[in-house]
Image (cartoon, rainbow, N blue to C red):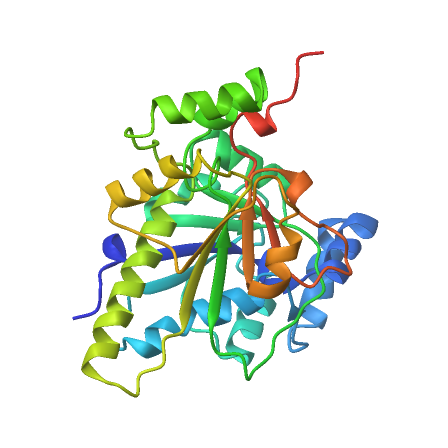
Length: 312
C-alpha cells in the first residue's frame, strides 16, 4: 500500500525555487500584478527554465520509482500565485514530467502557515521573507541561494549534504561557541558527550532520508542488481573531541550518514567539490557560496544563534 501523507517524507517547494522566475518577477516589479497576470497568460505554453532546486527535486521524486508500491516521498508546490497565474508553473511541471500533483496557491500571501497541513519536513523557497517567517514559526525551511544550474541526466544518484549544528541538531553547542569561544565549546561537548542533542529544523528530514536508505539496503539484499540512488553526507566544522557528541546524537536517533566529515574549521568547499551534492544545507552564510557562478546548490537555514541580529 502507498504511504499516507502522514508517513511520507514531504518537501514543499516554492515556484521560485523550482523554476527560474527572474523574467516573470521583473515584470511584476516593473509593471504590477495586472501586467504580471497578462504576461503569464500570454506565455502560458512557454516552459519555465529550471531553478536552483530543480535537479534536487527531480532526483528526490525518483525515489518513488525505486519503491513504486510504497511511494514514500512527495513534493507539494507552494505558490504565492493565484491558481490562474500559477497555470504556467503547473504546465511546466507537466512538461518536465515531475510527479507533483498537490499544490497550494496563496494569491499573494505567504504559504508557510500551511506547511504542517501537508506534513512538510522541508520548505524550499527563494523568498527570504517567507523562509525567515517559517523558521520563526518553528517550521523547517531553507532559502535557496543563486546558483548555476547543473542537471546531468546521466547522474541518477541523489546526494544531499547537511551541516550539523543549527541544521540537523539544535544550536545549543553553537551558542556556547559563539558566546564563550572554542575552548569552552570543546569543554561543554566533552561534559555532555553522553547526552544527545535536541533535534534541529531539518532533523525530521534527515531521519526520514535515513529510513529511505534502510529501504534501499533491504532492496539491495533482495536484489543484487539494485543500484542505490541516495547518498547522505554530514559536513561539519567540528573536530575531535567534539565529534563524539555528533555520533551520540545520531546513534540515539537510530540514523547515520554515508559520509561524515569533521573539518575542524577547514573550508567546506574543499569537501563539497568532491561530494558534489545536489543540495547543501547550512545555517551560516559564511559557509555558503551565493555567487551566480557557483555550481553547488546552497540552501541557507536561518535558524538559531548564528542568525540572530545583534540589538541596535
